[in-house]
Image (tube, one colour):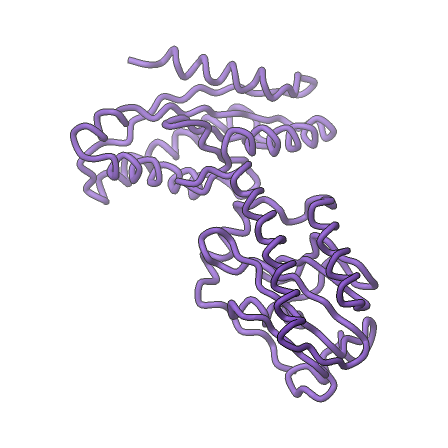
Length: 316
């Protein structure tokens, strides 16, 4: 069995997949509808819309007898993401790359596989639309074109999610995405009775950077700040650019004392970054923090409003 290689842009690919916040989410009719369409069109045993994580293939939508996630090492789809073209295996038993693959030799007994890469808006391949059957079969040019038509619809839905929840400049969540994911996280924290903090950042001097340097420098300053947030906080925290120069972070399972320490270290990192990069401007900001202690009110709107008002009060 041949294990799939890693794409050349693997780091960016995984980063893009993580920021999309689609892994381990519930079923979605917009994807299930397209899975049903492909299943009806090609009459295959299994149809799936999958995303390839660091060590697994995870199915957002699946029709047929297939686990929701499988190891990446045995995944057919992990081969598909290595190219922008469809990946076709007419008879896996006769293909030395797959003939002893456990997905071929045991249930679901994949003998035929066709996968089409699904791309992020930045061009990285995040996953696939795939169809599988337990009998070998042909797949001609007309089949491939029809398959592509459905894959294009899947990709359009994926891009729609990006547009509705993701800030296009920084790659962080936008205001809508922040509200949705933060409320989900707050609901979890409330069930666990876990402390939570919300930090609201108001980056200062963006207008001056645009005027004295250029609009491009202003955009770069925002991207630098977003990058610092990404490295300064945990993967479990929810990060967003709410509007032009306003950012926010929801820190789950984090008491206020710990949050203050984290923000102090973040400030040191921001100051050090500006010096190391020899930026012609400083990345100054105001920050306001709200929090929920045990038995508190896990209300997203209230937390955001309190943190925002505190940030505005600290303006020079």
